[in-house]
Image (cartoon, rainbow, N blue to C red; front, top):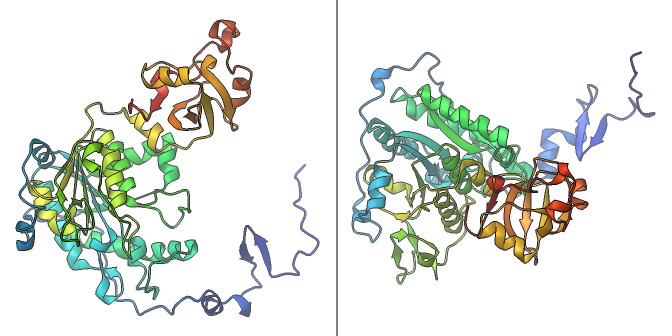
Length: 460
């Protein structure tokens, strides 16, 4: 017998329902004068929209391959030639210049025009696309990670400063993403290249099946001749559940697609030991390990972006830990950056590249709980490369299922690593501190097998 949904006693009396903080209107609520777009705008102190320029369409027929050649790298700026950031040669730079599969990340300030109120600047994008096309003509596959959606939506919505309220930021991203992708598509169409939009959230990277789907989509776009344009899906990402900035997203994408190099472009020529406007600042051309970063002072993001130099250094080190070399410089230097990599700062990769699974587990996966270890177990899993056994566990924290990713803690609560757990939390509670031989036959497997355990100490 079909069940009939019971309506609340006051059904039909109120024009709206309150659901998770949202007001849901019924068909009779069209004349609700308290919540018209104008009243909401006044209530939330939002600006009046500005007049938008007409938008021209993109080709809808297969692109002509005859137009796909003829680009050249932008010339080196004379000021760049005379700066400390230019003219560097090394084996790692040659490796980057010859890399087959390259992820290129472009920051918001490099794509938008401050003078007219934070709109997408077609001339800047054309210059960038010219360089990208020249590199592709030289034989490289490129994946673009593009910031700029929120910044590009600011002028159409009449916003003079980057929004901080989540809902306004998401609205700006929804508007700006359309403008941003149109300009990318228009510019690449000059060379007969279609583009494909790939919007990701931290949740996509955090779930292994969704991360694999994103990887397959990006690969298929490349195979079909389209340029993947990746951005964080700001319209649905929430505070605390996002990448934080597209520098980290670029590092994760670089590992996801097994890139041979990552190029991070912003508005700074490279890494300096302090603010480059300080005349005593020294340029750092190569970062081989953490020792090269001692004493470096890195700043935060600018007025239209979220990723300052600190986030770029963090992302560069993240990618280098996965075995991907990184070149960090300004978008104004995109020509020499993609042609011979003799500009900017290079971050050397770690020799022992993490497997795709271990990198995902350490830096992208969602965690469902925590397991605390004693000192002996910490030593075994970090230095000995051993599996985690029940005898070394002192505490189970949280409620998780078999096969989920958990954080592994040391005695003082420090995070040691992450791993895929072989038992659910309820089962593990009964196993804490027990020797393997004292456990029932069906519970003598390692709690986390070494093949599915990744630690921060050795990055293994």
